[in-house]
Length: 114
Image 1 (cartoon, rainbow, N blue to C red):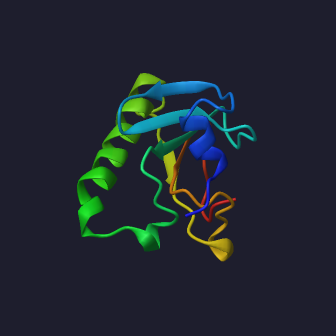
Image 2 (image 1 turned 60 degrees about the horizontal axis):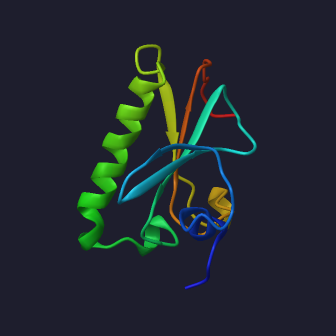
């Protein structure tokens, strides 16, 4: 498994603006935000893509969604709404191959996404 920029951020080898951290996750501000609130919720376990997740990751994935909900509330975007995005592989827009969830809020999002 390749070492990613997220692995280096988790190990504090590269600085990042950390919004939240516990023993399983780190949430950082995206360096290229697409909304007033744009966090990346990153499990500390390196799972390259959602396709690489297994049944053993059910709890971790559920906890990641609940963390997103809690962070949305903490940052005050839960009532008006927010978007969660999980990109998978190249055609899905994934650029860092360490599973991560984008939490975007603070503006209206139309449909289709864009």
